[in-house]
Amino acid sequence: MEDDRALAWVAAQKRDLITTLQSSRGASPDWETLLDLDALAEAEGEDWVFRGGVTRPGRHDRAILHLSGGGSDACVLREYDITGQRFVPGLQPT
Image 1 (tube, one colour):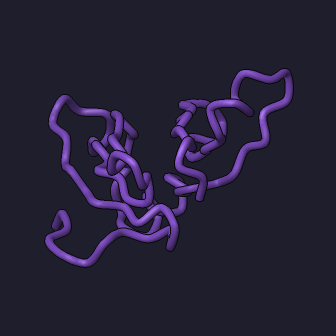
Image 2 (spheres, one colour):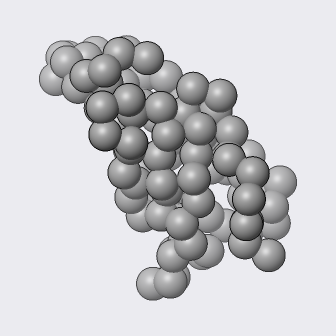
């Protein structure tokens, strides 16, 4: 993953996309699926809504994702391994 990669999340039909900052400025960004929120919702029985995220500075290989159940004001924070495209094991919502 490039050091200058920036997350460009979209809350649209596919709510789970990423691209480089340079690509996002073009007419046809080169999107890559990072986390399929619909599949996550089905697997966990929760309607997750993405509320934001922050990547690890410099490396951008991990992110803290802010997810809310059903779009409520309350959020849970979950660490996501961007390179491995999976959540980091640890405490997860119940």
